[in-house]
Amino acid sequence: MTEALPLLVFLTLLVVNAPVAIALAAGALAFFMAAQGVPIRLFVQRFVAVTESFPLLAVPFFILAGLIMNEAGITRRLLVLAETLVGHMVGGLARVNVLLSAMMGGMSGSANADAAMQSAMLVPEMERRGYDRAFSAAVTAFSAVITAIIPPSIGLILYGFLANVSIGRLFLAGIVPGILTCALLLLVVGRVSRRNGYPPSRAVPARARERLGALGDAVWALMIPVGLLGGIRLGWYTPTEAGAIAVVYAVLIGAFVYRDLKLARLPGLFVEAAVATSVILLIICAAQAFGFFMAWERIPTRLSQAILAVSDNPLVLLLLVNLLLLAVGTVLEGGAALVILTPLLAPLLAPLGVDPVHFGIVVVLNLTVAGVTPPVGTLMFTACAISRVRPADFVRSAGWLYAAMAAVLLLVTVVPALSLWLPGLVYG
Image (cartoon, rainbow, N blue to C red; front, side, top):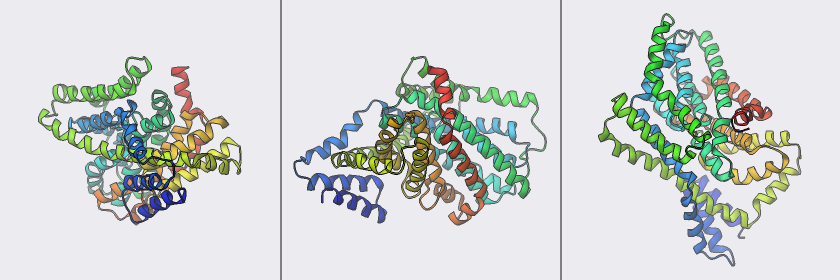
């Protein structure tokens, strides 16, 4: 009874569309109330203990840094730079959309934030220039996947915390898969644009002087990911401290170099960051309490035994885990799925020789790709809501984009070197 009741409560609340954090907390509370020999006060202890984690402080810092950068005009300067680089190509504005997400990956760390920002900023302009609105929304949502794996990624921070893996290594491991994703999306967007006759966003290529000018204007923004990764690798600061440094840097650049950031806006940005952080941390707290129930009932061990009964080949298991992650991610919000599944799956594959850094990239990438997939994909619904596009039209226009994501997932899964080469080069 103590094993079935928490799961039943959790699944029932999910079916009736209760918030994931509430479903997890209610399921955990049902266990503590029904189990013999488990004091109910442990529920509160398990719920709040995780908030004392130093690595988790990186989450609110990077969320706040991303909000400040948007307010400071950094996004606009990156957009100008992206247009000078690819705007003259067929489907120029769609390519700018993809390239901007790659650049923003080193700034915001949040795929949902990137999708929301670019849906409001680029989709209307793409439609005015003759692009199909559903395709424009799809490009925006799919390009936001890049943001989730190029550092500093909030998903990678959470995985590193949950799996006890070096966040610095995870940040480096996300760079090559992020570039690969960007390259394949640019290729696919160009192909679709050529077939549909979508025009360049500018008549002629930018001159070298114009590109250098745009680069010079954006260089302060582009220095952010370089400074963060370099400082972490040299031991000057931890990933958490890097988040705080990113906030200070963004304020200084926005207020005193670009002069677009009004200091009076900072209290409002602090409130926005606190609200966004509270959503994530509430899920983490509830998942930790729910995780106590699963550990007590030995559910991870039994799940491991069931999966290993299928095969002990690491590649086969990784491919099966890919399918599991995609399936779960299509019905559960990505952050919640990450918090629930990481403690279950990471210990399963490590003894078989699967590198935990490589596995972290696989997990975060899968759950982010699930975000553009019906029925619950948060990236899809964010782009559709802001762009006023029906999800059915979104899916119909995104066939080649889904194919590109499938190729990325397969390559990143079966070629660990894509994730591990750069951390190995830097850390040895």
